[in-house]
Amino acid sequence: MVEAPVRPYAGRMVNIEKYFGPVCALKSINLEIGRNEIVGLIGDNGAGKSTLVKILTGVFPPTSGELYVAGRKVNFKRYNVKQAHAHGIETVYQDRSLGEKQVLWRNFFIGREITLPFGFINVKKEKEIANEIMVNTIGFRGKGITVDSKVSVLSGGERQGVAIGRAMHFKAELIILDEPTTALSLKEVRKVLNFVHKIKEGGKACIYISHDLQDVYEISDRFIILDRGEIVASIIKQDISLKALDEFLLEYAHGLKDKEES
Amino acid sequence: MKRKDSPLAFLGRIEGLPVVGVLLLLYVIFLITAPKVFTRPLIYMSFLQTVSPSLVLGLGLTLIITAGEIDLSFPAVVALSGFAFSWCFKHLQMPWSPWIGAVLALAAGAVVGYVNGLLVAKIHVPSIMATLATQFFWYGITILIAGGLQLNIKEVEETAIHTILTGRIPVPMISTDPLFEIPAQAIWGLGLAVFIWFILNRHKFGEAIMFIGDNPNVARVMGINVEMTRIKLFTLMGVIAAFAGLLLTVEINVFFPTQGQAYMLNTMAAVFIGGTLISGGQGSIVGTLFGSYIIGSLQAGVVATGITSYWVQSVMGFIMATAVAFNVMIGEGQIGRLSARIRHWVVPARLQAAGESSKQDDMPS
Image (cartoon, rainbow over all chains, first blue to last red; front, side, top):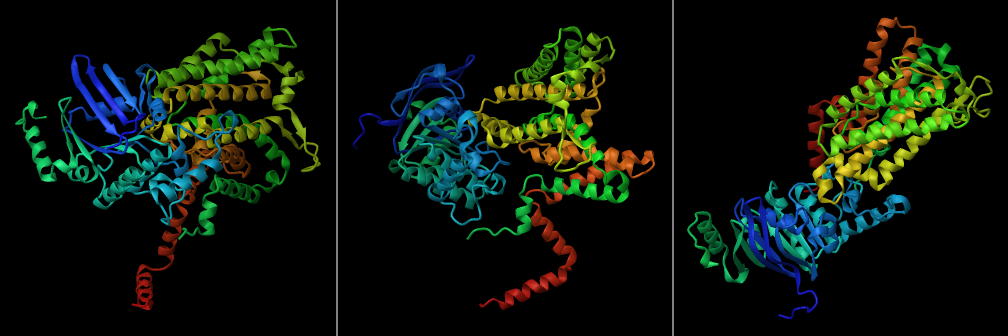
């Protein structure tokens, strides 16, 4: 493998720990995500997945540890959602990525408007670029959806597509998909997975979090398994079958597995 | 294939069109039922004058409701600002007293609004509760420092501020009637409507308001400072309400402690008739502009028709409900559904089914 010397990783966590009062939510997390890698983050409820995501996306800082994004060290004192965006981390949530009653072009640029003097929005430019993203990045061709459509007319899968397209447009190095397929029909899940493939094709990295092991298995290059705040395993897809992965996880769920096995 | 829009659906996308329709319909009805009053320009001039403070309040309130909040404290701000202006005018030296008074009045509005904003954004008091409380508080304070008395400021008519805010502008092109002059406050109201329209629809601040009203969690994860936006918004509302208070006080040349109280429900009715969503996320400035004129024209119009005064309130309520229903029915995106429904009423279902099956037969298999 040839590694780029300047930015070998899209994201890297070194000894990240997070305590909520006396409760340890994450314990010495060491994690590297390759520049064009899709990592499936797996773990039961309370394993620390969402804590990990929130640290990455700047919702709150860790108690200790270091985070590097695209080769740059993150200063947690000044790290917030806007900073995470500036570093190239974008998040696609199950249900809070888009404003439902708002038109699509506004959703693409909310928080990062293209402005004229005095903070007025350059509507023409925003619509142009939004249209460009819809046609070329997401591939919404001829579905009766335009940049002036409201999000509420889109299906669940299409909404995630818009959020993913937006993330790719803003040159995200690392896109985090936090349960993007929960509450979607099978057909819509398929659409979302196709969008995730586009991230891979676009040469970007992705952390994919889902309860549906089948989807995670299909889409990911590597699986990271979290259990009670610790990474217990990092398995490359070639090394394990879906069935074996499923059994492996079940053993953890039943508390049969010892930690040495990682 | 691009989705084809029927011309009807295109009309439905023009902001505020249903409200304009209702207003015109209303004037047509009044022209028929009270021709003596409504064929003369005087009544329209009087509307331009009386509606303006309510319109100004409605414009601010549209922003607040779009953000998913409510402000009940604006009547108190109207009174407080009127008092601040009148007091300064009475007790300070000319020529600066009206200007100091105006600045102080707007500043008082900003303070009230800022406190509202802090309560809502920082302490997380629901806005309906916070502003209900501040409405009582500031109203009480105003009565207290005014000693419950009114202040006559007749001399304000001689000042420049009176001319600027509420002067009469003759418009010989429209009417040569010497009685027909446009009140300056109508221009202020219209100008503010244009300004606020641009703020809501073309400015970062307005976009933040819409997204916060839609879903504050989305706004937050997209990097919008939700708290700061809410504080700014309530402060702006305070300043706008104070401006409405100035327009009112300078026009009528008197401050009285209960001024503003009458605006509470009328202003809200105007905003909702205009098509602003009570659930937040979407507001129509054009709708509020015409909604204010609907509400402002109702009472005088209904009285002029000669209906017994006992009926006036009920007729007004009926017209308001009709206006809102009309708006919902032909509002954005509803046209298609409505025309489908009309088709159902006009063509019996059985015939329709037969028509569709015959269409299928026509298709080459």
